[in-house]
Image 1: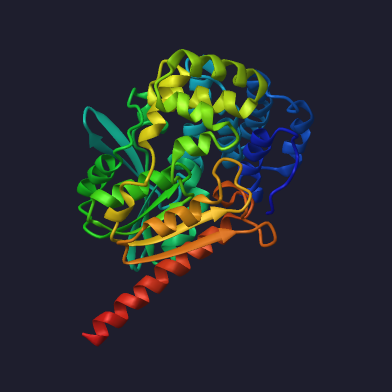
Image 2: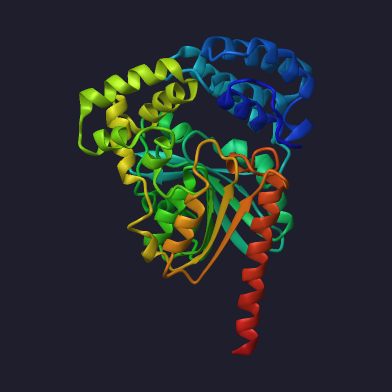
Length: 381
């Protein structure tokens, strides 16, 4: 499935492709084309209504995985506090676990402070290694099921978990932290793991590298999207003066500029709304200032693991130049491999939506190469 231009607004189009990328397992393309004419503008209420219509239809038809993805999309742009958002999340979760009831998927609740971190596991029959995976800014663990089913057949047990500011923990009141080594340590302790590969998706690319810098039980780490500097990423199309206002603590000026920008740009409006939600920030300034902690410039020299960096040439969220900046900063890493996916080959969008298979192949090939290197070292010894 390739990335398609269906809707005029970039972020709405990306979210539709987020479902389409999984093909017939996640949706009926003709149903998405059916609602597309009504999604030409950014209207969270209309977006919810149209996806909800598809979700209800899919449930009536017994197409539970389709209903899962449709319910997920229906809640995506609704702000926190909307009854429909909570109901859609509950329906999403219910449909997913009904759809996977007869699979080898296992569910866990991991103690973390006074909260629980949900996790799902897909075990390999002949295990070569264990892979932990988490999302970032806006994902749920259940969404990754169709991304990762190939890994157990390749010999890798997969554990997908939600941390602070994500999925159910967020709904329970646990807000995002940049100190991602803490939830990762809780997961490692719970499963009694001493050697894993950690994969972080989207903003999780920063979170995973942060965890690797401080958690030696991580042997290999994948940044499935590179967040060299989250604030710089947000400000990629904005003047340097706005960046400096944030750094200098100019609260009123930043909030005034943000208020105007939200009226003019749907992606800014959603990014600020959701960013404030996951970080527990009262204003756009508070959220943007919180982003100053989400960068890898200082911690990169602390990372000693094998590192894989994945980027898309036309990523509309993250500047592609972050790949080279991050790669150069990993001065202590055991090895560093970087891959920039181009429009010609596919996978050029954020997190390779449209050609996730290319990223999967790259990750599996990289992990297999590390296994062969380890086997060669053991034979030489």
